[in-house]
Length: 176
Image (cartoon, rainbow, N blue to C red; front, side, top):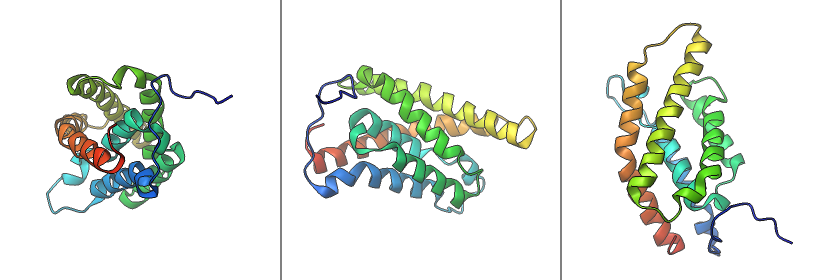
């Protein structure tokens, strides 16, 4: 007897090896885009959370192809490259995966505004959580202005990222 992990309709089988790696590859690409050094003053602190966008998308549409271990590894790698406390991004991505997976059935086959509203709530919660963690680690109350701006920027860019991820998903995996 097979264990039913997800409380949603069965996911279509993906046979191609490249297609099976698509969620991990695009999430890794999102992490890479997040850490690219751009010569824009203050950009590092305000970089949209591209990795969060990819993790949210794939957890809704193909959680079977985005293992938590991959999210953990990508989060640790991102922390190491940007000089953040190691494990903070990994923990965030795993929490996002867990929360989205538990509410996934409400987002599958819904309109984009509904999915975007879920992302909005998740993003602001994640940004405030990160702000609290960094404030505790620094033993000081950090300014919340950059955190709010980064959250709003992430939410504003999500429709473009979602469109690109969905388009890539359909091209590589078929309908989904």
